[in-house]
Image (tube, rainbow, N blue to C red; front, side, top):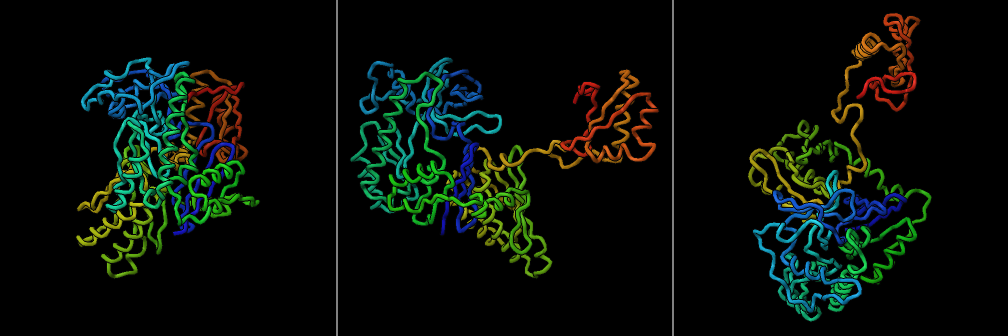
Amino acid sequence: MNRELIVNVSPAEISIALCEDKVLVELNKEQCQTGFAVGDIYLGKVRKIMPGLNAAFVNIGHEKDAFIHYFDLGLQFPSLKKLVASQVPGKRGMRVEGMKLEAPVEKSGKIGEYLEVGQTIMVQVAKEAISTKGPRLTADISLAGRNVVLVPFSSKVFLSQKIRSAEEKKRLKRIAAAVLPKNFGVIIRTAAVEARDEEIEHDIQTQIERWRKTIAAIRKHTAPAQIMSEMSRANTIIRDSLNGSFSQIAVDDQAMYNDIRSYIRQIEPEKEKIVKLYKGNVPIFDNFDISKQIKSLFAKYVSLKRGAYLIIERTEAMNVIDVNSGNRTKAEDNQEQTAMDVNLAAAKEIARQLRLRDLGGIVIIDFIDLHKAQNRQLLFDEMVKLMSTDKAKHTVLPITKFGLMQITRQRVRPVAVESVSDVCPTCNGSGKIEPTVVLDKKIENQISFLTEDRGRKYVKLVVSPYVAAFLRKGLWSLRRRWEWRYKTRIDVVEDQSMGIVEVHYHDEKGNDLIKK
């Protein structure tokens, strides 16, 4: 598989497109200078304890207080709390490797037993702020590298479930045990299978050094403050995805280009040449055919081959995807095989759309009905296989007797599609507006109210050009008839930004006469 990473840098944000065989499969947007990225570590101050939720709200500098649940404190929170308290300016604080670990957190305890209002705690962003919700936090700190994830206050070596070889497991555990200091554990990632011993050792030592710098930063800051920043989103994707199938990484910004090259030089020097600085006159996303794919793939309707299509609806509670065969059933006799072909093509596109739009929560898929049990099982197995490349945690459930498949998928960042669309101000997202045939009667009723009930002698109507032309049409226009009927002066003013049936009523100074 040919994989490319295309990075577009603008003053407001960085857009990162991941393509597989020239097809867009992931789109990430990172707002410049907003912070609060997943993996960042902060000194926070507890603002409020919520006993009913067994949770707390913590100020980390975001406009919305961040949220931490009791279960997110982590088993070793008392040891972390003790370590943070020891980091006093001007004094040498404790080090994890020299500590005697405290008793672990009880599974059935209450958050008030460990946190109090005004307390300073060390936390890590587990989920970015989404919509009206602040960031989600964890105090179970971990530092991710290319081959390993460092876990302080632990002494265990965990291995990725995807590592099957017993001999490889033994090698990886031996390497980790030889390098790890006391009270440090590690999770060995799948990428470590292809790594040399010295690369894994260097990765572990790098994360330990990052941890020591983070702890040292506590003495220099007062909560709320960031004490460790996760690497840029582009480098995070490279860290997690870079392998032999990457053909190129194209960047249109010199500073970002230098940053990425420097990072790759550290982890895989032989791949440094795949990073290329794009200097073309055409925007980078247009040059690599990304812009066109973004516009077409964020639509409600997604076309498949031979007339089939998907309808993707997003609600507050869940995401719903309907699979439609289009005109195929009319042209083919074998309905079961036709339905199976459409469903398999839809499954491939759905797996891609979930990654591309980063849809989270519950996803309900209404596949075309299959009568044979073996076909339903085959479709389920294919969906599990297609979703296996998705790095987000997910669960795929078998197809029900009603032909529905349920997928749950974790989301830690805002949905990408939310940033490229907005609710229509005229119809408020309903897709329906007031009938134009009764618009003149509605305007006349408002004029009658303003003149006869409020005693207004002047009304300015601010309307769309379409409505303005309708009100002025003819020698004895509606505007003139209303002026004569209600003994008032009426001006009609056009506004290109107004919705087709939107009307504002102003006085001589431009003040609204009818509050919305």
